[in-house]
Image (cartoon, rainbow, N blue to C red; front, side):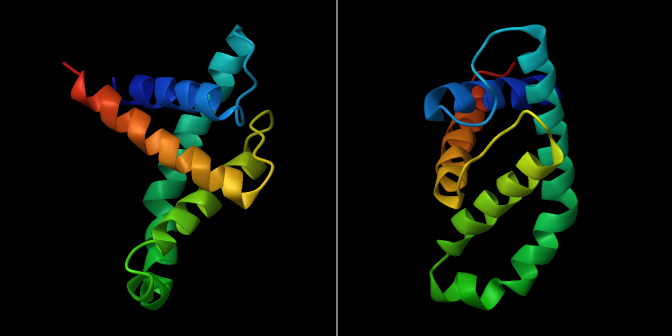
Length: 112
């Protein structure tokens, strides 16, 4: 159920931000969103904790706002891994990560 919620969140965030997975409803976009959800889960559980610890002083100086940049960098890394998932800039990746977080939060509220 968790991976389905993440896949829906990627599709919804792509629709809202107009970046990421191409907005043409077909089986291919569904598979790309599923692959992005899996890749983001792997990245967030392996690479992101290391990056967060290394950048802890900067994160403390910015009162946690640098974590948005870290999330954006993780999404850009996912866009390099998954062909068909296109993020044009770091600013768009940060915007995508904020929308993705909000959509995940809303979907988890309605989870049974």
